[in-house]
Image (cartoon, rainbow, N blue to C red; front, top):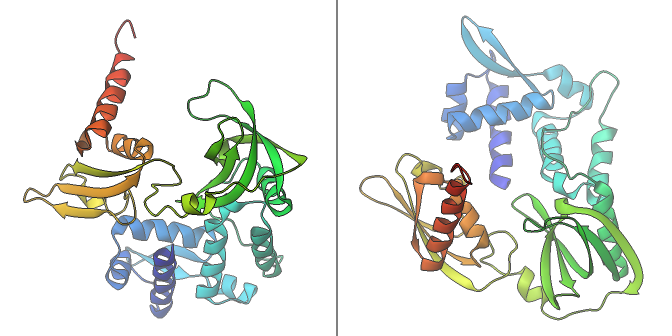
Length: 308
């Protein structure tokens, strides 16, 4: 996210220096980003009413809307940083931190112009996040109405909440599941309701070691595994943009294929990552991951047979 923010600020500065507006080619040269990335960034700037695209002598040029900046009393960089920070914290909707940031943005609004939120997905209920924060602050046990990917229906679960953690833009609750007698992760977007109980939460050991697990693909428990995946040359250039884990190692074959090597915690998220690449990915190791992917693809193919 810091890299994206730095690039947006450089983008604004480049556009501001261009008296007749900047071309996309000039922005690519200035930032070193791809054309697709520049177009995504420009959508961000247009989304907050900060920039527009005009045609000058048959050439598309981007310029900043100085009136919008003056009306808000902000520089281009300040407004971009403020609104981008708000969009980044969308998964924390309902927390005190986001409320403070909303207040800062509201202070800059006028009747003439308004800061529009970026088109980022928001949690279905900020109330859920507020209740979980309350339970964590008061150290109270909760019941969560939750449905995992494997569950047929929603089910109440009694847990002692331990921490809220944001990974890859997704908010998770780490909690000690009483029926499992172990720590579990719960994706907050899958929690339909929360009941904060009057029972104090027990301080179970082991949370600090789990949450700080350096090789978690997101937030996932499991033994560490060495993974090696071959990625087809046609899409190998996207591996850096969609990494398996942050500290993965990538080697490039003579034919342009990428070989991704990483240490992960458990194979659940690694399997999902491989499946996202479709026919362009082949698991080389471990055998357990390869077999799991093959089984999933075989089951998916079976659904398309006449008797499936």
